[in-house]
Length: 270
Ligand SMILES: Nc1ncnc2c1ncn2[C@@H]1O[C@H](COP(=O)(O)OP(=O)(O)O)[C@@H](O)[C@H]1O
Ligand SMILES: Cc1ncc(COP(=O)(O)OP(=O)(O)O)c(N)n1
Image (cartoon, rainbow, N blue to C red):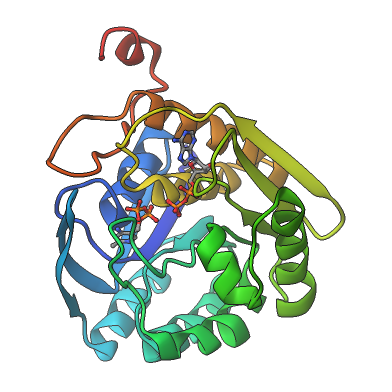
């Protein structure tokens, strides 16, 4: 019997294909996982920003989740945009039903500055979802929102990662440095120690969906059985190349290139 590795994303949509469910599924596919998706919100957005959001009804969210758990294996799952507290509660009740790694990208505000989650959902995220995670991957503003502390230095990033695990019960925390100047350094606290993942900063405006792509890549690698540290290391390489060979598409911040690590593509693309 051939073994298929299955990864699930629970997130919002991006019709322009750079972020959200679309970015996650492209990443799963590229990393040779069978990709599945449950949609929380349909978002009218593109490289310039968010135009409108339509939240799917709660009972429909439940039916989508049920469609997965009654029929399909899940080796790892990620969540992205979960805008409302009641959606979070439904998802938090469902996750323990399946025995899989859980990576949370705590999406709050898009790069274009548009809010993708309601203020009142933050407490549910902290109290009910974080303790279920194998890993949470906040950028700096999201880590500040979770911990309630300003992050200015690399020391602050490390302390935030540690606090998210020790004070909020996350399995591990990866605080991403995409929003800082200088080298792109992310810090992982795995419950025991801090690990640093560093790449050069690539000079480009085309970084739409980097966080989605990164967390989806980590999810795919965990599904395939890599250790947490190795999964983050491989995913960091994947997202760095996806930014390096990003597409100059649209009138705003262009999307990352999900097949940039294919040698034959990156050599000829740009
Ligand atoms: N210009 C860049 N060059 C290289 N790496 C980057 C760049 N911008 C972001 N990254 C990396 O992309 C990943 C996503 O980070 P970040 O942009 O902070 O997340 P988000 O998209 O959630 O805001 C991180 O590994 C970060 O270090
Ligand atoms: C539906 C949806 N989910 C998440 C995001 C945010 O994407 P992210 O990878 O954090 O990167 P930016 O696009 O904000 O750079 C989104 N836009 N849409």
